Amino acid sequence: MNEFKKYKRKKIAELRLVTGDELKYGLSGRISISPADKEAGRPYTGDMIARNPKNHDDQWLIAQEYFEENFEPFDEQGDNLALPLRSLLNDLVWIKDGAFLSYEAKKGLDVAIEQIRRYLRKN
Image (cartoon, rainbow, N blue to C red):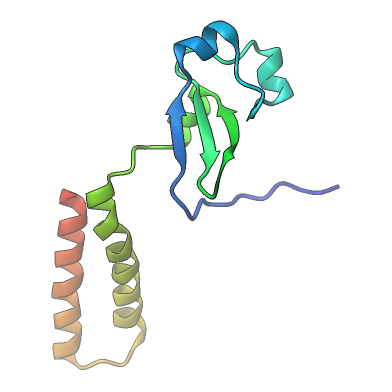
């Protein structure tokens, strides 16, 4: 039997709310909905439609509960800098903890690491 494993998303997702017309008249045939969601009577108010960023015709329903547990808004300006800074922070910590560096070099890395952490906490 094939076991499920945990995976973390690498990319930003594109989602939108289900519209009033979709609630009233049903989803268009191009939006996939799982058998379990169909049996539950979905779509409901608050459900989301996701799409493949590389193929906008590939769309599927996401239940509101799953959406709220697994997604948060993407801030174009803040996240454009935060994502590479988080990666840089991890690299700096790894270098500081694992490399044979002079005392001055480690102190310099400590300052840089703290400045990046402070920036990320604010943003």
